[in-house]
Length: 100
Picture 1: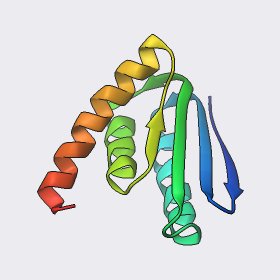
Picture 2 (picture 1 turned 180 degrees about the vertical axis):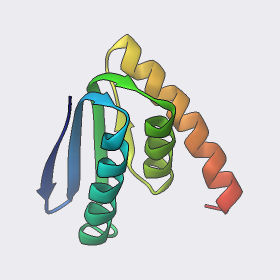
Picture 3 (picture 1 turned 90 degrees about the vertical axis):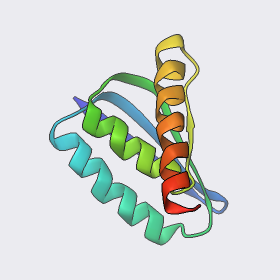
């Protein structure tokens, strides 16, 4: 099971991810992200990973691209902080490659 709860506000978008980000949910999240990006251009995006229970390699790669596009990833627990650190490291590499 996977769920993404989106709150669009004047200052930006907040997305809370829950469950297992893998399989077809990765592609679904990517489609949703592209829509949020278009509607919220130039605004802050925060993606809360705290309630994720699993993220496969494709999910981590998508989250790294979301991060590279300017979103802030947050996680408070030990597991999610570790995932955020790993993704942010990949995100930094993507930014360096693309000159951002």
